[in-house]
Length: 172
Image (cartoon, rainbow, N blue to C red; front, side, top):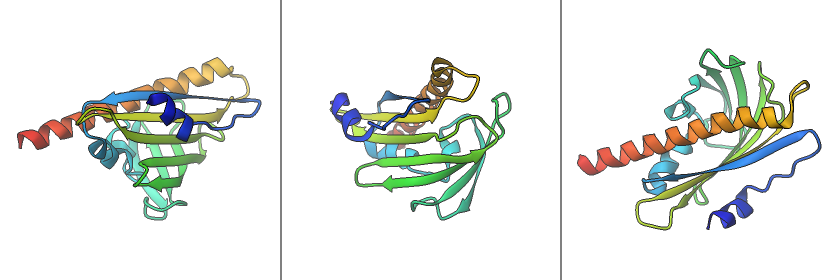
């Protein structure tokens, strides 16, 4: 099943000088709960722990072309990231965005996140993929290691938030 998900949504073309990968996170929460968090382009801080603040600069966060300005926590090699929403499809549970500016080295970064039913009741699978330019002075391995680490943290946090929401609603 995971292979089908990757084939359908996460086959971005890479050119020379780029790298990319995909990550899979199993979540003990219904896919609709997970999607309700992941789809909020204007609120990445709901689960992305490296985000300090986020402000919409264009659009409403629900339509392609919306732009957000993200301020990241201290300790990362950047302070801001400007990101454009490319797709938000509630029926297929797909969100795609591109980094279009900021004071970091992630040029031509494109991300796709999909949320799928997990094969058993009350479970979901999240797949996130990306493609990014390898910055001058860095290797493909270094670039992927940096991005992969952030994505893994974000996906674990998304799982934690959705699972907590599920527990709260069933206890409440």
